[in-house]
Length: 533
Image (cartoon, rainbow, N blue to C red; front, side):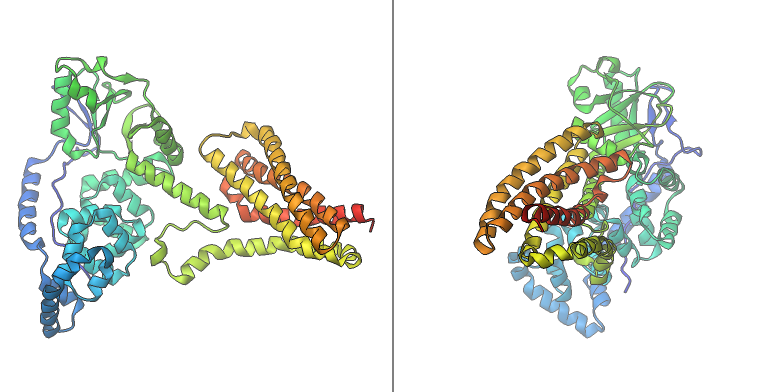
C-alpha cells in the first residue's frame, strides 16, 4: 500500500555553480550557503500555496487507503464521528496504531495534534510500514517534516518507500543537509539513489560533500548551512546579516567569525550582539582561540568535547583552518547516544542494534546476539578443560563440586563490575591509558576487600554444609579470585585502548568467561594445598 504526502518544500536558497560560500562586497560577509533566488523562491511560494490547499487531510482519501469499498468508507466516517468525544478523553491511553486499526479518523487527527513530533516519531517507529504510512499521511506538511527528522534512518526509509516521487522529493528537500546525509548513511543503494536524484543541485552538492567525509567523522554530522560574520563588521551590521541570512541557517546562537580567507578567528554569542551597542566592533566581542573541531576528527570525540565545555555549537574547520560548518548540540547528542548504545551492547555481549526494539523481529534480534553467544560458548570450553584436568582432585573430595557455581559466579561478577567501571571511566575521561598501573593497584585492593567480605559468608555456608576444611578452601579462594577478577576486569579495557581496540569489546561476558576458567584453577590448586590431596 503506498502513502503520499502533498506539500511543497519551503523555498531554499541557491548557491553559485562552484558550491562555495558567497561573500558580500559591501560587508565582507562570508556565508556558508548563498543568496536566495527570488524568482525561484516566488515560484516555490506559489507552489506551496497551491499545495497547501490540497494538503488538508481528506478523510475519504484516508479511507480509500484502508477500506475496500465506498460503503465501508461511509460506515467508518460515521463511527469515527461518534467516537471522537470519547477518544479525546482517553487519548493518553490509546495508541495511534489502535486508532488506525479502528479506522477512527478524527480521533487519530486529534492524537497527532495533541502530541509532540518526537512522540509521534516514536509511535511510528513501533508500527509496520502500512500503518506508519497511513498515519504519516494524516500530518500536515510542517509537522510531517518535523516528525520525519525525529525518525531513525531505517524508519525514514520505511516512510519514503511508500511515497510517490513528488511527495518523496518534497519531503527530502525540506530536510537539512546533515539530516539528509544521516539518512543516506544507512540507506540501501536504491533508496540513496532515489533520494539524491530528488534533490536540487544545491542540496545534492551539500549532501554529497558531507557523505564524502569518512564514516564516524565530524564532517558526516556537521551542518554546512552556517551564518559566519566577517571580523570587520560592527554589531549593527552583524545583526542585519543575521536577519537576512539566519532563516536559511540551522542555528544562530553561536556565530563563527572569519577573516577574508574564510579562516576561523573566533566566535561571538548572539546574546552579546543583542546586548551590545550597535556601533561596537565585533573584534571587541569575539572570543578568540575558540574551541573547534576538524572535519576529519572523530565525531564522538568532538561530541564529548561539546559536553565537557557546555557548548551548543562547535565550529568545524578543514585542514587549513577554513570554516566548513557547525556541529550542533542535537547532532552531538545523537552521536553520544549512538556510541553509548554501542558500548552497552558490546559490554552485554551483543552486536550493536540501531533500530527500534519494538519494531524488530524475533530473528533480527537473535541474529544480533547469536555471534557473541557462540564465541563465548567456544571460550567456555576452557572451563570444561580445566575441570577435566582436575578430575582426580574432585574424585578425592567430591564436595568441592558443590561450591564451583558459587565461586565462579562471585569471581565473574567482580570482574564484570570492574570492567564496566573502567570502560565508563575511559569514556568520560576520568582514566587514561597512562594510569594502567594505578588502576591495577586500585582494582586489586578493591577486589581483595570484596573477597574478604564474601569469604566470611562463604566460610559460614561451607562449614554448615561440608565442614571446616572445605569451608577454609572456599574462603581463601573467594579472597584470591575476587582480587584476581577485579584486576583483570579493570586492566583489560585499558590494554584494549592501548592496542587501539574498542574497550567496550572487552565486554563483561568475555571477562566473566576468562575468570571462570582461571577461577577454577585457583580453586582446585588451593584445595590441593589445603587438603593435601
